[in-house]
Image 1 (tube, rainbow, N blue to C red):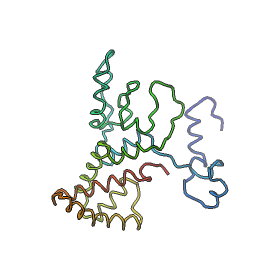
Image 2: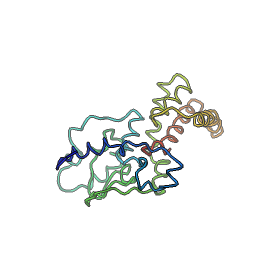
Image 3: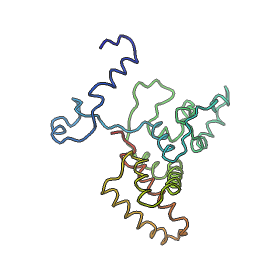
Length: 232
């Protein structure tokens, strides 16, 4: 198919190709013959980009605002001294519910939720993003206020919508991973839901606060799972 200089036609040709539409399913025979997928016999797994990861967490928490903003904090700040805006990026990161594409990028200052997951250097031209796997990313997913806060919001949403734990559990997997839990995942999750309240009770957590704490921990576990972080 002739596409000429049309970028849109070229993209359409690529995404409609058989190779692009392949699944990322494992095949022992093919892995043995081509472990690096050099011949493109499957779709390679890829981690969500920083913006998609941030937006996905907002979406499962029920907080994502898809409305384009009327302006940008950088535009409101105007030309000149950006120190005040740079100091407020942390607060902006945790409080802003709009899509990550609308967040301001100020040269060397990028919000933490994007910078830690390989957001390109804003001072350079980047033709391709790097994809790293470093301890700071895991620590952020386990301890970051942004992740913890939205995991709690997702748990509150589940508790308000689900009629019982079995329904909430299925809803959580559908919402976070786009599929129901496997039998193994369901059994492990049910054991966690049964045992973790006992641990919280031993730590002195009041009974009224335990359900939210339990479901917050489960939601955070789904966030750090490979099925949430990677596109298959």
